[in-house]
Image 1 (tube, one colour):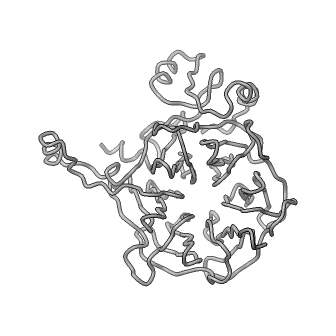
Image 2 (cartoon, rainbow, N blue to C red):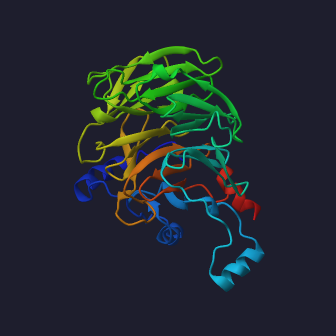
Image 3 (cartoon, helix red, strand yellow):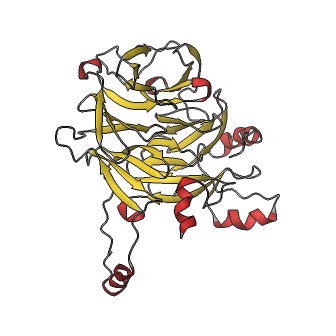
Length: 373
């Protein structure tokens, strides 16, 4: 992805009066070689701006990553019955990605499903060890070494596994949280940021920070309120460049930015129906150049901002139909090592994947499976 979306600002203002937060197919009219491609693909944003993202694929279950054998294909052709047993997502919530392995928390199935796209396999985390079974997984994240952190809302603890699903340890005492929501690990894997969403009868609306090596509680950010640095039903955290901490402050309809030590910097967003506003913000992610992606469940899209909260573009539209880039109840979002974007919709039980427009389908960890064919 390019390091600037500088040309998008003017068209965003125009779109605010024309389309009211709907995703659109774009065609770059300045390069005729791109016109044909854009006409065949679902790309974003609208002209006259050049496309930045293209819809790549949807993951609904294990059959989307598990290859079909020749014998199975013949059986399917003769009988009409799928030869690959599919284990579908039931109620996906959050998503994290490690080297082409797409980890999705499934709160109804009570496990983390792993769709290993390069390895063409599907497996589960959190269901093998009875004592350490995941009971209600919500947030999930993974560090650069492949260590997986799962926010278990029933246990009220962070469950830690290796990338193959071996249980490692727990972080946090259940009494430390009122209502556990999400977990985020910083790039070097030394700290996790745990969101306590609180509730109507609690002032514990905050982010709690822990040392991942020894589980020590380091410090907290926020309390219940609407002032700068305070939260009302916080939902998720992302770590940006220079250690900036981005917190989705759901009940205050904004994202708050803090420095690496938890000092308040600024806020962006407000309740509203225009581009750059929020209606029901859920999760947040940051790409390799520091742009910020915010999922909004009510708008049915994700909006992209620069590191300081200036709106760049949006992707998706609220839809009652199960179609690519159409969403009824989106929740989770993440950006992988190659800047692919993964967007979860709970209502349609799927994960949509968007690729930077300049990237080839065979590029990156997710593309390596196509390259090998």
